Image 1: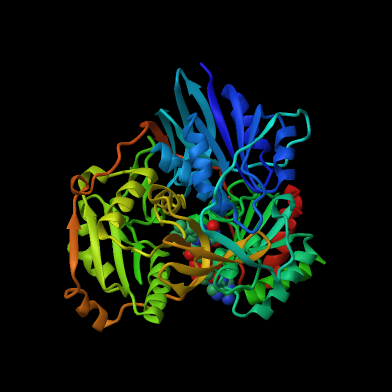
Image 2 (image 1 turned 120 degrees about the horizontal axis):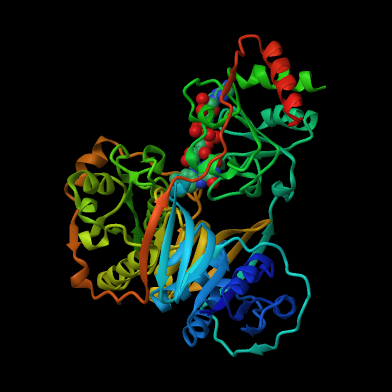
Length: 301
Length: 258
Ligand SMILES: Cc1cc2nc3c(=O)[nH]c(=O)nc-3n(C[C@H](O)[C@H](O)[C@H](O)COP(=O)(O)OP(=O)(O)OC[C@H]3O[C@@H](n4cnc5c(N)ncnc54)[C@H](O)[C@@H]3O)c2cc1C
């Protein structure tokens, strides 16, 4: 058995992993590309069989093509893959609605059993893994991977489409520098145990002394706005697998810790001896971060 | 303006346990209004108050979503009224099924200008219900919305994108998923809890709504505990921070982590 797959591209051609998954299912691979023409061309060169492109978006956001994408997919339903950014989720949601198909997140493996698609995925914030068999169309929200190397040249078919009534009227860059935590060998994570933004200097000091990147729990990036959104770790943020992770002033809620499960060594520093973070640490220090972090920075020098 | 806030009555998996055979035990995890939903309520309330509108709480799930506790917890939030689809057929329903029911309820309520949801639910956390809901309605959807202004038929929203923010103008009804920091929710006070019992509630069943049939069958083959790395769990006495730091650094250097 093979099944045909759709790859939904929401403006970003970083879909290398999606192409691999689609190829493993054996059937024809069609990409539905929303975004400027060069995105469609990159995808067409990346190893798919066919590209359907919805035209130059102008000032329409990716989301404006949700109905157009769903219509195209509904004409030839199959397995629908896409990455889980905010725009991607809107396109995938529209496809799931049109097909009345399940939209499954957190998949670690996708395979076929006869005509059924078998998906192993992480559920309930990562406390369990579930294996499901889906008969009929299915939408899978996955990590896109990197931009595929140019290996082929699939035909690009332009479909005339009327975007939904939404336009981009302004784009503002973030005040924070972008970071790729995935590449960091060591990471210092800081949470709400930090009292003020200026105390980040303490954390920067430790990061400097241990040659690490600074990361954080979600509230520091969303709510406090002390660090950029690409620095928070967890189920809704980054998943990292560094050699060493320091969880400092972080309680260690499940939603944070799933993001560092792959870390080789975890050090927890927390004033509360009962903080859940200690149950997932290799080394635990109970105490005030304002005393321990400077001592640690000194010891590293 | 008529604004619907879709909320969830859900337990926190932090309090659930997974047995050796992989079964998830929720018995110690008490359901509550899902963590980020009060942000959506607050965002909706601010917009409704600015435009002279109404905020309707909407939820769908198994019978428990209409229990006294659940009703009270929801209605003590800043809703004007609630519509509750309580139906045991929704036990364990997936995002697409729930979104189909919510969409049917939004149609049933009628003349809705905006549906606002939280960022993600505490139990499932897939972030897909708002976008599938928009797909079911054929409405535009935007996720990670940090601000909304405007009125019925035309709103301006600010949302996060990689490396910054964007302002969008949307005409017609829409579904917005609020970012976790879009508004600071108020904790209900005694007055709100007392007022909760007086707010109108309409309960509906799935059969009353006319929900489209699912296009696929999902069969759960099994659940298991994730295969986690074993951690050393070694505690270092930190009464003397300098000594503790030296001990930690030595240990980390010993294993090659530093
Ligand atoms: C659906 C959903 C998704 C979520 N996704 C994420 C996610 O992706 N990432 C994420 O991080 N969170 C996420 N969360 C939030 C998560 O549940 C926690 O609320 C959050 O991680 C807590 O952040 P924290 O540990 O910094 O803060 P807190 O839980 O408030 O912990 C602060 C800790 O600092 C300690 N402390 C205080 N003072 C000191 C001191 N002087 N020295 C040392 N220690 C001190 C305290 O003992 C405490 O343990 C999500 C939640 C939900 C519901």
